[in-house]
Length: 99
Length: 481
Image (tube, rainbow over all chains, first blue to last red; front, top):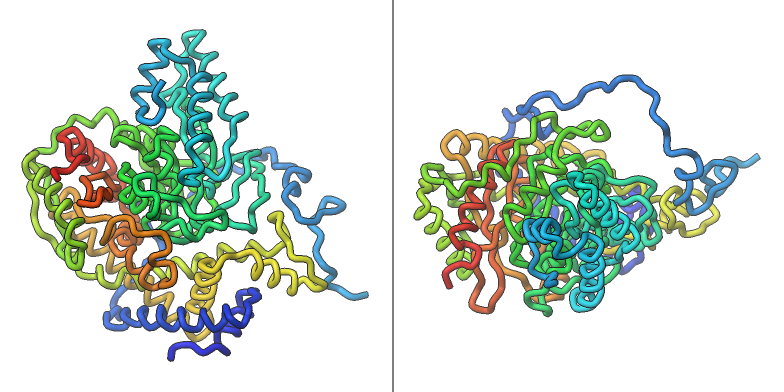
C-alpha cells in the first residue's frame, strides 16, 4: 500500500479540495496504482545526473529583462469583469479578520 | 462552394480568382459547421460576429489591392484553452463555463493579423488533461471517422473539426501528446513545435515546462504555414525563444534523399499489429524516397510515463491553484474563505483534474519531493540526453504516435493508469522539448486512421516538415492497404 485513505484526506487538505467519501475511496485506489507504477524510476541510478529544471538550457538564453516602459494596463473594470463578487474596485471574499 | 475539403491554398486561390469573398466563405463555413457540429460535439461555441468582422477586414484589403495576409479568409477553430478576447473560453471546465477573457492569446493575434477567420472554440479534455476528450465537462467529442470512437485528446475537438471539414485548420495545445495523438486518431496533420517556439501568452497553463501551442491541418503545408505565422519571440512570454523563424513553406521541395532517419527500437515493442504494419509501410516509402533508415536506441523510454506524470501533475497542481473562487467567475458560497476555496474546487473540477491535483500535491509534499519530483527531473534529463545523442547520428526520428488507433468511447475511461500508459510514444518529445508531428499513414482494416510521428532536433522544424511533405507528396497519407 503506497497511500491510505487517511493520507488522501491529508493531501486533499493541502490542495484545498473538498472530496466526498466515495471520491476518497476511488482516489486511494487510483493513486496507489499510479504511485506504485512511478516506483519504476527507482531502478535508475541518477546519482550523477543533474535535474532538468530548464527545458532549453542548451539552446541559448531566453530570459531577458525588457525595457522599463509604462504600458497601458487592463484597467480596473476590465480586470474585475470575471469576478464572482466585486466591490469598490476589489475582489470580495468572505470575511477573514474579525473585529 | 465545397467547404469540407478546402485547404489554405484553395482558399487563397478562390479569393484571388474572386470565386467567393472572405465574408461569403465565412458565412458558408459557419453555416456548414453549425449544421454538422451535432454529429461530433467538436465545437463548444461559435463566434460569428468576430468571424464576420475578420472576413470583412480581409475583403476590404482585397478590394483596395492591399496584401491581405498569408492566411487571408482562412476559417480556423481554436481550442478552448486558448483565450479569445470577448469570446468565452471554458477550458472544458464547469469552473470557467462563463469566463470571458479580457485579452487575446498572442498566437490568436498573429493568426488574425495574417487574415485568419476564427469560427469558434473547440471542445477538449478539462484543462487539457486527458487522452480521449472524455474528460470535458461539456460531453465527449465523437471521432468524425468512426462516431462510436474517441477523437483522441486532449485537443480532440480541434482534430475533429479539421477531419470533419468544419474548419480548414485549427489550433490545439500539446503537453504530453494532445495535438499529435488526436491528429493520428482523426487522420489529420498535427504539429508540436519546439518548446518556446510559439508564445504561450494566453494559453491557460496546465504544466508550464511542457505546454506547447500547435497547429492542425489537412496538409503538411497548411500546418507549416500556420506555424511560421504564429512562431517567434513574444515579449509577453518570457519562455518564448529568440531563435529566428525560418520560412518553412519555402523549403518544402519534396527532396529528402540522403537524410538519415532513426527508428528507436523501444517504440516498436508492444505496438498493435495493424498500426505497426502501417508505420513499417510508411518507413519503406521513406526508404524509397532515398532516406537512409537505421535502428537507434532511446533506452530511457520505458521511464517516460512515470517521469511525465510526476512532472505534469506537480506543475498542474500549482497552476490550478488559482481556481479558488476568488477571480474566475465560479464560486461556491461559504461562510469562511477556506471553506469557499475548498467547496469551489470540490464542486468545480472533474474527476481527472482532481486526480492530477492530488497526485501533484502528493509528489511535491514534504518528505516526498526528492523521491518523486527531483527524481523525475533527473530522469527527464536522461530522456532528453537520449535524444541529444541520437541526433548526433540521425537527422530525424520516425516512430508511432499511439500504440493503437482510436478506441471506443467509454472503453478506457475507468482505468486511469492504462490511459496514462497509452501516451508513451508522445510524452517523450514534450519532455525533451523537441519538435514533433503526426502525419496520416493509412488506415487499419476497420478504416481507423494511423499516424506516423516525425521528431527532429530543437528548432529544426524545417527538416521535420520536409520529410512530412515529401511523404505526403509521395502518397504516404493514403497508406498502401
